[in-house]
Structure formats: C-alpha cells, structure tokens
Image (cartoon, rainbow, N blue to C red; front, side):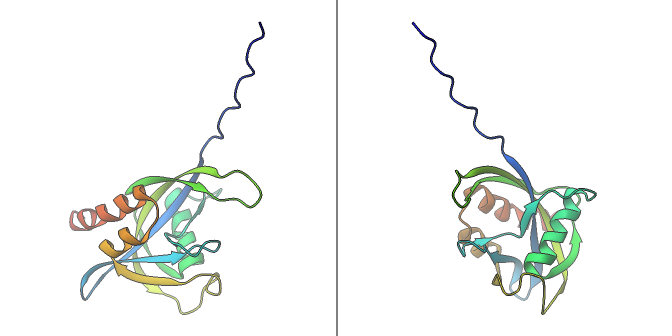
Length: 150
C-alpha cells in the first residue's frame, strides 16, 4: 500500500496594512472609502507593508496614494480583517489586514490614483454596510467607540 501524496500547504496569508480615514462631520462620525481598481467595490486604502516604514506610516502612505488624504494616524491598529485577494490567472491569495485609524486633516483635490478610484465620505454605519468583508465591517463599527475613548 502506498502512502497518499500530502496536500500542498495552503499559502501563508500576506500581511497588509490599511488606513481607516475618518472625520467629524456635521452629522457626526464619517468614514472615507475608495473603490478598488479591479472590481469597483468599496474598500479602505490598503497595501503591503513597506520597508523602512512602520505599519502605521505605510497605512498613511496608502491613504495618500489611494484616497488623497493626509492626517494623524494611530500607531496601534484598531483591528484586522481577512480577505482573499483576487489575482489574474492565479488562485486567490489569503490576506490579513491591520487597520489603522487616520484622522483626516487635509483632503487633496488631486492625488496619485485619482483617475483610477472614486472616494466617498459616508457615515460609519453606511461604510460598514458598503464593504464586502464582514470583519472589516466590524472594525468600522468599532471606530465610534475608539474615537469617543481618545
């Protein structure tokens, strides 16, 4: 009897960082989401970790490039979420994303990915409903308590 061939190990999740841009608007807490370039779904600005930068600084850089916003980023993540990154002609890759709140102090009229993405301010409730990932929705819902406790 031969031993069965072992299944290949699933790929190790890729670590990513995201900014959760927020501000206090007339109606209360607002969150800024952007559209993804590939599917057009609502997401937070996110990307891979960057050599020479803390994860918080890398998340702030993603917010600048993808959403055209700058501000004060928290040094500790608010939470994390998991998703499958859709790749062209390859199997989806699991990712774990640490989410850093970013209090927006400046919104640029022009930014690096302006032609590739839409951005929209919405209430935290609307933003939680707009995103596809349930874990991310939970992180967004926890933002109000985090802001209140600062």
